[in-house]
Image 1 (cartoon, rainbow, N blue to C red):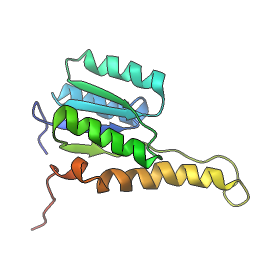
Image 2: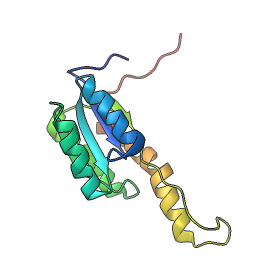
Image 3: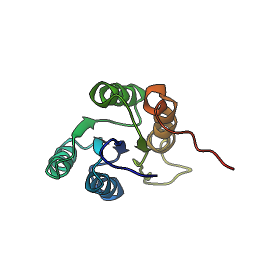
Image 4: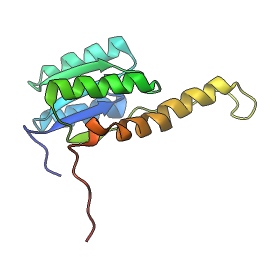
Length: 137
C-alpha cells in the first residue's frame, strides 16, 4: 500500500512503543495522523513530536475499552479529515494476577482493550467507509 500526503492514518496506543513508532513512520511518509491513547501526558508529548515533523496531527484522548470514546474518536477524525485510509488498532494490555482466581475486572479490562477496541473501531462505519476492501485473485 502506498502512503503519502493524501493518506490519513489512525493509530490507537499511539503515545508509546509500537504505536508511537507507527506514528513516526506514517509522519515520515507524509501522512496525516490521528493519535489515540488513554495516557494524557504521553499523548500530548506524542502529538508535539509528530506535529514537529510537519504532519497534520490530531490527538484524541481515548480509552479504547469504552465504546463511546471510540465513537468520539471516529467522529473527530471524520470531522477533521473526512476520511481514514489506514487504521492501526494497536492499543493492547496484559492483565496482571491470576487469570483463574483473580477478579473479573481484570478480564473486563483486557477484553475491553484487546478485543472490543478492534471490533468497535472496525465496525464504526465512518472509520472504515473509505478503506479499500482487500481482494484476492
